[in-house]
Image 1: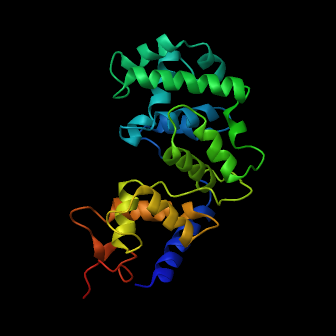
Image 2: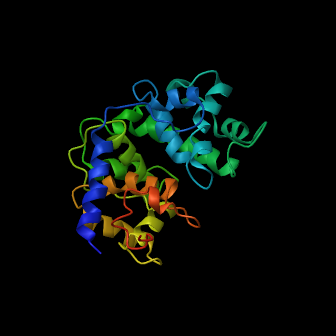
Amino acid sequence: MNEAAIRDRLVEHGKTLLNAPKEPIRFTRNPTADALLNDLETYPHAFVLACVMDRQIKAEKAWLIPYLISQRLGGFSFETLACVSRTELASFMAKPQKLHRFPEVMAGLFHSAVQRIATHYHGDAARIWSGKPSSAEVVYRFLEFDGIGQKIATMAANILARQFKIPFSDYVSIDVSADVHVRRVFSRLGLCPSNATIEQVIYKARALNPTFPGILDSPIWHIGRDWCDERIPKCADCYMNDLCPTAPKK
């Protein structure tokens, strides 16, 4: 296996995405919800709160929650959010239909995140990433929110850098988010064994591209979602086909 060639091609695709012009991100299947999440100037808290909600349900549904709550509130200004009680949020989460599998728990996390933005960032969530901070600082700030772990904190920093084009002083602490797609593709490319832990995948990405491990995340995730299916992989369509040790050879 030519590991260096695999790394170089993945990094090349990652750099193409990183250097591409900024375009609106499709977080959900709702254009109005996506417009809210993409408006970092007016509603940076919408992006942060969506990250907090992104757990144990499909991402598209989780990222829709800020918009659905904005409909209940008649707006999504931070001043409006800061006045909403935890009890009110629990009601919004549960009725008339559940916005999340765990409405009570997620209402608490949502409320806690609003309070943290109010007290630590003076109501302006963009302070989390403004001023060209280090990647480690941004990841750490996301980790300070209740309910956010390494995977979501890294994902948030990666989206800010890669798609929102937010400048950081470095990218060394932006890791891959080792979900099922990423772990499967790492294994099939021969970069990690099939039973590799999340930590092993993360550290392998760091070893492959130390200055920006997370640049591998998007190309590998797309390979896993679009071609490298768990049961029926479409190897012939994948641009890694000639380098992949598990792809059928002619």
